[in-house]
Image 1 (tube, helix red, strand yellow):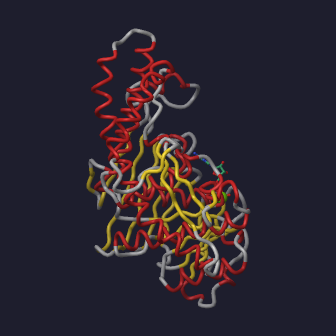
Image 2 (cartoon, rainbow, N blue to C red; image 1 turned 90 degrees about the vertical axis):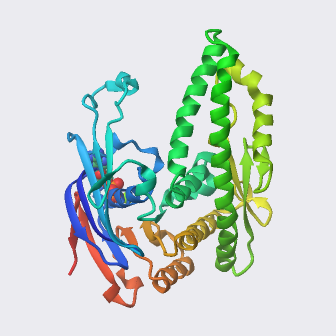
Image 3 (tube, rainbow, N blue to C red; image 1 turned 180 degrees about the vertical axis):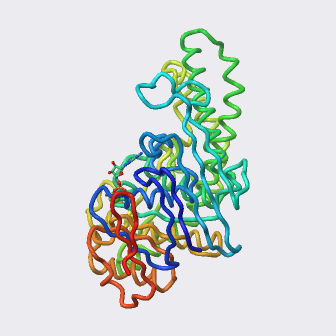
Amino acid sequence: MYLEKLHLTNYRNYEKLSKNFSSQINILVGANAQGKTNLLEAIYYLAIGKAYRAVRDIQLTRWEQNHFIISGEIQNKMGSCNVAVFFQQPAESGGSAGQNTRVMGSKGRKEIKINGLKVRKMADFLGNLTAVLFAPEDLNIVKGAPIERRRLLDNDISQVSPSYYAQLQQYQKVLIQRNHLLKRIHEREKGLDELEIWDLQFLKLSEEIIQKRLQVLEKLSPLTRLMQRKLTKGKENLEFKYYFNRKRELKIGNPIKEILVQEMEQVKKEEIARGMTLWGPHRDDLIISLNSLDLKLYGSQGQHRTAVLAIKLAELEFFKSESGEYPILLLDDVLSELDLERREHLIKIIQEKMIQCFITTTEDLSFLWNDHSKIASYHVEKGTLQEYV
Ligand SMILES: Nc1ncnc2c1ncn2[C@@H]1O[C@H](COP(=O)(O)OP(=O)(O)O)[C@@H](O)[C@H]1O
Ligand SMILES: [Mg+2]
């Protein structure tokens, strides 16, 4: 699949953009703070239905404007389609409106369209464009907090499993309600009996989310292992393990529901004492091990980098196996960071598999390709794109 055309209105520092892209290599060259990352972020938005790294829609709206539009023409195995997101800010946002964030509708209004028709569910929108994003911060998948690894899973699953996005959103809502109730129970304003209804919902969503994560890991794990072996000539063995509440490994086929119920009963007293939920998929983690040692603790910087590249290559294959076609690849400032060998490996794969690629860089990188007919280069400056001809 590929993104043929992108239109932006009032998105970050883009006032108005309308550009055609190459179905293969697109190189975006420009100095810092000109809008290269913003462009990749906009494209990725169309793939996951939101900004990556929990940025709020309000922040994406061009300053002093009240709405943004991202719209993309996509060619995929189903033919061509247009996917668009329209976001309207809440009437009274901006300023020091911190208090307002609790008011209903203060998040603004988001509308999604396919071929010009409004769709109600994100599930109908997602999957038209799938994308893998690779940015320098991705080193945090290996080195950072558990949320980074959960985000990797969640962003990938949302693109291939239509209902997952809604389940995650629902989970967040129920979690907030449950926390609120636990606080009230702690303050003796509410009784324990009310917790039961929320527990049932919380349990059901937790189980569904964990099951999906395990299913996806079952596929992503061997692919990543294979990529790591290729990148290290068979020397390094990479493995993922899913850790429930950071203390117990879960595998596909385990009696997940029983395990969750057991944990829920075990921590309930403490939950009430502390007025917060102390278990659930929002507290789970992924342990990445290399030759049986925890990569985060024992890996070298070089091993971390290689592992992240292996994960990204595995994601490409994962999407291919799920949907039958390769996703597009967004490389934000990473090509110049890779050593020669890894860079050549990556470029070889992009070329062989004919993956559409968006590459941002501050220096000219076109010399990396021998066939220039497949490359379109753009100069990015202050939220405008000029194609080099
Ligand atoms: N909501 C916004 N409205 C207008 N400009 C923004 C907004 N958010 C970020 N910017 C601007 O976008 C620029 C950063 O763009 P970015 O894509 O990160 O640059 P780079 O080319 O270095 O990747 C900065 O100049 C920043 O001020
Ligand atoms: Mg950038």
